[in-house]
Amino acid sequence: MLLNLSERVYQSKLSSTVGIADEVARLREKGHQVVDFSAGRAAEDTPSYIVEAAIQAMNTGHTHQTMAKGTTAFRKACSIKLERENNIIADPETEIIATMGVKQGLTIAMLSLLNPGDEVIVENPCFVSYHQLISYFGGKSVPVPLRPENDFRWDPEELESNITPRTKAMLFNSPHNPTGIVHSRQDLEVIADIAQRHNLYVITDEVYERMTWDGHQHTNLATLPGMRERTITIMGLTKSFAMGGWRIGFVYASPAIIRMMEKLQQHLITSCNAFVQAGAAVAFAEPPKPAVKEYWQNWQEKCRFATQTLNDVPGLTTRMPQGAFYAWTDIRASKLSSEQFSRRLLQEHQVAVIPGAAFGSVGEGFIRITCVKSWDEMKEGIYRIKAFVEKL
Ligand code: PMP
Image 1: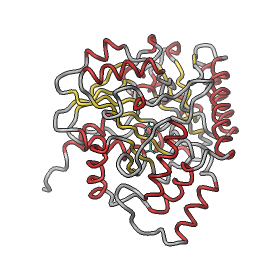
Image 2: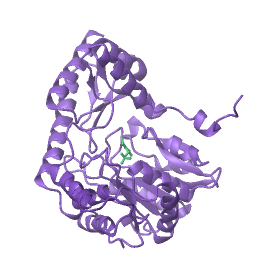
Image 3: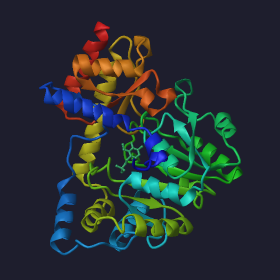
Image 4: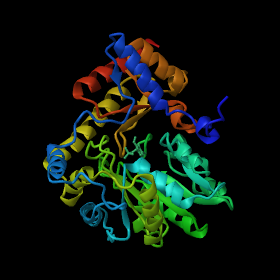
């Protein structure tokens, strides 16, 4: 009999999106025309000028490992982007590190901050991987509700009442997956005030920062007075440039934290891929090209199409997301749980969505619909949801 495997990993949950993706694959094998609104993956491929830059890098010898913190060119491009778009002046030598996507940025953030038993405040609902990433490194996630009746915003008193002597950090995501809210400057001032009074770090997952609609503005927490030293800002290219398969992003944080992360990258990954960094450097160094802006415009139109069409269905309520590209649809009138609704929708109408409960208990009563599929899929899938609900 072999010895037990890791209890921490054994006890952690499989990603719910993986379970749905498996079911989609099974149905497709049987010949069903499934519309897959589950994963947050756009129909578009990476813009060709970025692909070309990576190919050129491969052809000119950028096929070796780089510095653990990333190439100078990539880190400089990140700092140019931060100054141009976020009003942040960051030293590429000491305040920026390359990561293999936002998830890997979150991984080294947890490893840099947490000692066993440390608590991290997270949103409920939140991105499915947060709880596992915190627990893998000995921490404990403490979910705080973003209630529908409070417009999915923190209640400052409730947030503060969850802070204990073990709280080390707060982790939040804006624009928010899955609810589509964009935290306003006032929301962030609440977080900044609590963080400073309780001496906490704040990790901000800004993977959707370029996707804000209808005049909503993304604010960087790190720019608020007193927050620069205690904020770990994580950004990526997965969503905005349709580069999910490249696995690239970066962290902007204080030199003390970046030094910790550099050590971690040396041992965990050696470095991010050289040619991937070359492509990503081009994406960040220059203002987004028309091809990229067209993607964003398209995604906004698809979000609007989905929300408007779903709002015509009695029993469904969907608000246009303020940011990110998900419709977060209130299905409470159906009297089905989000799990039942999603399972029946997949089995009876072959449309895959994510049940809200997968993101946390407050997500019950909602489903998440990814709105960046091709126009044909968008139309077909949304009309099938309409047909399903009308027959309930
Ligand atoms: N954070 C959030 C909130 C996400 O929605 C996602 C992707 N669905 C990620 C992180 C993962 O980003 P990356 O692919 O850059 O690791």
